[in-house]
Image (cartoon, rainbow, N blue to C red):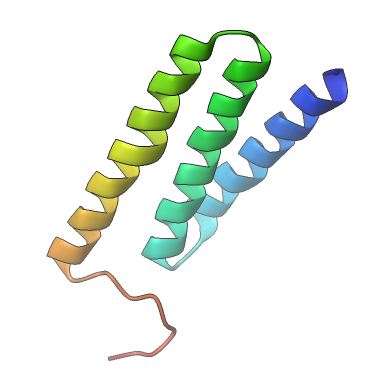
Length: 84
């Protein structure tokens, strides 16, 4: 069971580093959502379903949506690698 926690922490660390180092802003938002969703799974494993549900809704859902809408508003919403 400790392997699951270690795997989730490793996923969170890799996704957090990816969010910091990625040049594509859309990919960075997606990596941020992965961190939040992995944290919510960790909370479920720690038997805190109320905290997990809140983290998934606010961290994974609402914050990612707000960041994505901000990227679109700023004109930084580019999924492809084209330089337009």
